[in-house]
Length: 176
Image (tube, rainbow, N blue to C red):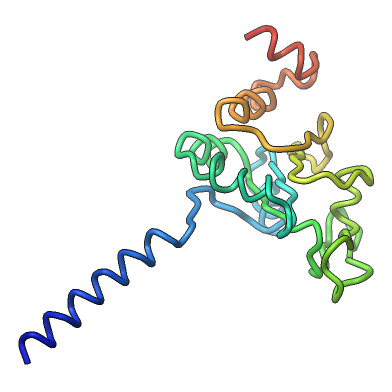
């Protein structure tokens, strides 16, 4: 009986360890668009929107390599309301009194949500990063593609420093 109990305990510990190692977690406090807009009304902050799709390899790399970085997660949580938005979602999104939907909500791949189209000005490249000011207006231009943590921190600091008002991102990078 002791052998069975020991074996069950051992198996439980091993399985728990395997589950922990395979479960991907992120320290970024991701919000819905609605939550970010609501919080922004109470306490204005920049909103960061990461647009992704399930089929995008570089979107998964962004998650595993950049958003899982504790420095990046902390910086995002401290300075932004972070939104992770599936560009092909079937959800209805109300933003600035406009209702956005996906015209093909049951056919996922290649059917972009109208809110994603709005944020990206129709350009469908993922992952994409969009920044929104405290008044709900997009600022700067969307950026496309994967950023490793160091480069992403530079992009985030470009917006938190307010330099996007006076110089381009390339000028900002050269000034560092």
